Image (tube, rainbow, N blue to C red; front, side, top):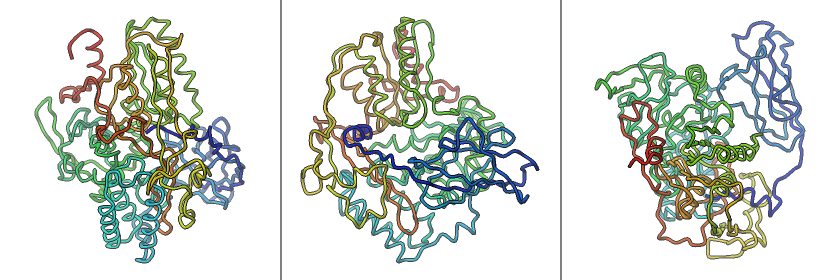
Length: 598
């Protein structure tokens, strides 16, 4: 879906700059810390910085280092890490993160590990029948009031039936873990990729009770159709080599595992490949959905019995490997492999493959607040392309789910070689003003979506349409003087949704490049997004993202395909390519460039 965030900031002036004072006590304890170690913290919000240390002290000698820090800022999230004797903890892992609040907070930590609960702590997170009913009433009220196109892929009667099923499933064992599990499964039936239990927005109880548990598989994998193959190995068994096919885990066939896990994964409409792709693990993601939902569906394990097939030798074997936390797996993978992204900008790479061909890989368009000058990076790319008179330019967005549409637009404006007219978007929402009874349970980054007022007009029984002055207008683009004049290729895959689906859409519509790879995520019938409300259920505190705006191209019709953009050249990965580590899509592109028939 076309990202509307910056558009609405421009028109509506929606970002708040109000500062507040927030006090956080950071505590760090671990029996392995040597006596007298210098423990410090760095972060991205003053008085923390990434360049200077803020000291933690153990004044009472109990082995717990701590510092109480006062923040005076309009920012809501602080990214940070601890250092011991000058070395960063959690090397190769994401930064820690805390949401600033009005009231003082105490945050406990374990060095080099994210906190997690034991079974006794998890078992105490239980709710009464009345509390569950209140949460589900809030969920239903919020969804039916806010979601801009709730019944696009599900009927009202089916959704009502799903609510009844959800209630029965949770009440069988009303724990926080089960609320998260079954609400996630319920949300997937709506078939909206922006309606889900977003791992980035959950409370600490869910992080400690689910995400940070040491019950994760000690390897990552790549996928082709319903088959999984070892990518990177963090286990103690060196036989888990790249390219081995995973036949089963704990006696359950891989295709059956994927089939059951898909019931928790959402996509836009009937984009089956997108749901499968969301279960793939490459090792540098902060949250892997396979990690989260495997344990919820099949239970936690200390040991995984893994059946593997070596297609090169036509042999199979079974090995038992120990489970581990995602944090430990990432630490080991970063020690063993050098291909994992450590920083956001590591996902932006440009190289000249030879004197005729250049490759640009971008793994994320989510550039907001990253401290990375992406425009300067791209400007330099096009300077090098023209300076070196590169004939063939490959843009690889296969691992890029999306982010800011301005990035894709910035690139496309530099590769067009004819005048291009881009259609505008019609924008819809389901309300004029948020009902007062659900306001206590939702929040977002702006005041604007709480009350659209005159900005919308009644369209039909369930929808309001944004007046044309606030909609995204069509544009006409002309070739730029410093633009690229060679042949362009766009590598796509099922990961592409949101901004990268939009980019592929425009490339396909206007023949701006040859698209090579697999069908994108997203949906040609339109998607939901723009502003998001973050719904926090009042008792169990499980969070659900709910999109606010439906966007449709002005030439929209029900006849559009119920799925993503199909490439000009569809590449199906062969088993021999997977086991030999061959990049199938890149190889196909280079064959086309060399004049060979793919």
